[in-house]
Amino acid sequence: MPSERAIRISHTVLFTLVLLASIIALIISATLVAHYNKEGYPPVHTGGYTARIRILLVASVWTTAFGIALTVGFQLLGNHLAFGLLAHLVPITIGFILYLIGSASLTALTDKIDCGRSGDTFSRCGVVKGLVVISWIDTIFLVITLAFLITLAFVARGRYGVHKSTLYAD
Image (cartoon, rainbow, N blue to C red; front, side, top):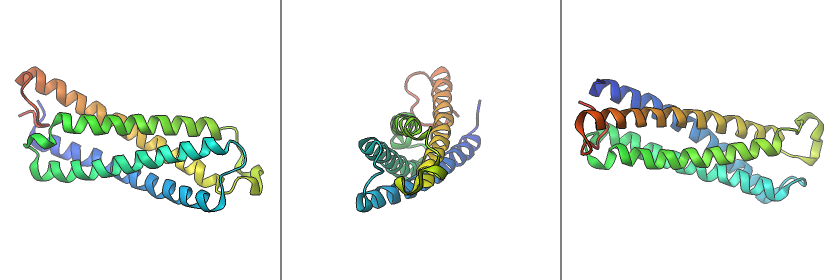
């Protein structure tokens, strides 16, 4: 049975990784949206880039906001119901789905594009490819975090029944 200390350390490490990747994705996607809104989106698949980069912007804002709230809240009030399993599972699942949709769709749009050959027709091509990479990294961190939370949920349910709702198993 995991101890309170092990859960607190695991939670801190996982959410720090998620937050770091989300903040990087937030910065990249926000600068891309600002740049393309000012200069215009790439001529090929314009609507595709607009929607996909904005989905990743929403995903990074969502994950950053809830990541900060859950990390700080859990450290201060870990035994409180407001920072329990359900309060962690719902926003992390939504963030995972948003990142998965955005990452997969932007990957499909950019996977055949060679930034060296695109020249001036696709400004910020390398930055878009960087957004794809950091978005997949954050998606992987979110899957690991979801596995951690689901494991804790099963441990808590098996040991304490349906009424156990905080992250602590002891």
